[in-house]
Each structure stands twice: as structure tokens, then as C-alpha cells.
Length: 119
Image (cartoon, rainbow, N blue to C red; front, side, top):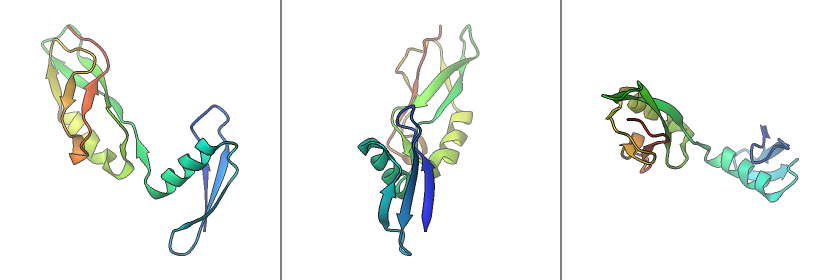
């Protein structure tokens, strides 16, 4: 079985091909021009993760919302649950960059943090 990926580690966007056996074990990785591409492909096939970015409602502030992101990448299969929590979340003004908006989002051990100041 082969899986084709486009590496996102640098602007080159290498077309990486991961060949796996019937048990899902990686047999070969080709198409990458650097070690980072191999690492990306290996992780994407075995444990895909993503940074989540969005906005959260600000209560009592001059602006309606504040941009937020996860403090680290979370498992791709947790994104729907994380977005559900983000959509329910709000934070009281003032908000500062780095403020934790949601602790342990989607039970990942990773926090959702503000990425801008709001008065």
C-alpha cells in the first residue's frame, strides 16, 4: 500500500511516497529531499497532528473575539472535539497574549491560548 503526501516542512513541498506493508508498517519513504520530510511523512502516517487555530468570544471587551491556538499540535482525530469546546468557550476582557482560554482541550493535555491582546 502506498500513501502520497505533500511535505509541509518547507516551501519545497516535496511529493513524498510512503510504502507500507499489509500490517501498516512503513517499508520505504521516497521523494523527500531532506530528513525533515522523512520525519514528517513517518509522523503523518502513524500519528497525524495539527495545530488548531480559531477565535473565541471576548466578554466585556472592545472587540468581539480574540484569536487563539493550541499550545502544541494535537492528534488529528481530536480536532472535532477541540473545535466543539472552542465554539462554546469565552474569555473575559482584558485578555493578554498567552492567557489560557481552555485548559486541557479535548483531554489532550494541551491548552488553548490567546494569541492577541484584547481590552
